[in-house]
Image (cartoon, rainbow, N blue to C red; front, side):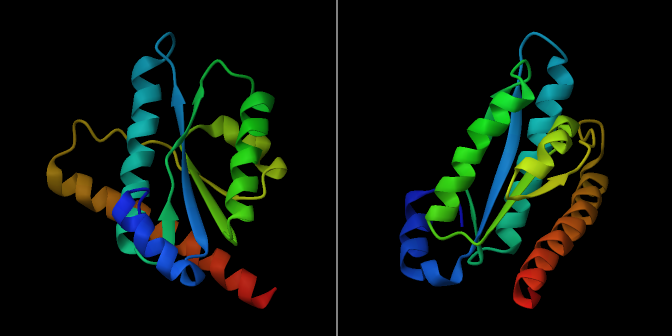
Length: 156
């Protein structure tokens, strides 16, 4: 389910079945590494939207958490922890964060969510079929990560 009025209406009715939030982590910078920064965000948005499409009804894709590339890791981590708290207080048992920014790996131990880092794959010069195959392969890995999270919570 997406962060839209129509999906949120369904979410409100089916809340007990939706226990997972997906949060894309998107960097912003117009002053350094512009193309790679945009590429990271674009790639994570594509992956997040496809994940939501495949698991619609089981997870909620919330708006991206955006941060400045120049912001300190401590600052962005502290801000993000407030998002985690809100989602947890709202009933989310699992929070999956998706990022292409390797800097988030430094903060992983301070987060309660499951952080999934994927290097951005430049899609701009790929033909459409290769693009679809690449995204499909990545989505399989993300789906495995999510289902492992769900299974580990059942066991533990």
